[in-house]
Length: 194
Image (cartoon, rainbow, N blue to C red):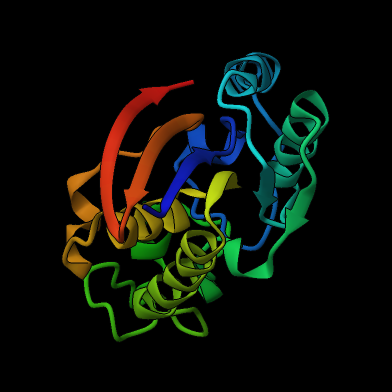
């Protein structure tokens, strides 16, 4: 019987998160609460005993992935497919700033860029799904440190849900989701905030 255990983690809270800014490929420093999350998450994950830690190359996720890798003594694999959705011209803006600028912003339609010069939700779903397929094919225990959009898309892919079911989950900063995949069937085992 083939079994894979995957622990998804969203990066700690940043100032952009608190301010409601759409930060995809850019960066934002951790808040005080984000620094607390950064300090406590690795200890929680150590009990999971991962074989590998996977991380987005973006600093707000990579810092945590590096720390988890060190604490768990597990090799780190940085994967470009784990970067957050590209918000294009809306990068760094709040929803009200986007509306004030009269910018077309569409988070619901999976086949249109979320904003001008941005990425489609279908694209992020394909990237996250490909990472999940690689993890399942390799078996074992994996920690994946990423972003809200990739977390949603990965969870939907792992659980075999419909593409639009990404809206069924609220993804907090430092959210942890443990999924066991047995013979290709994914089960959500734990869903907690770190």
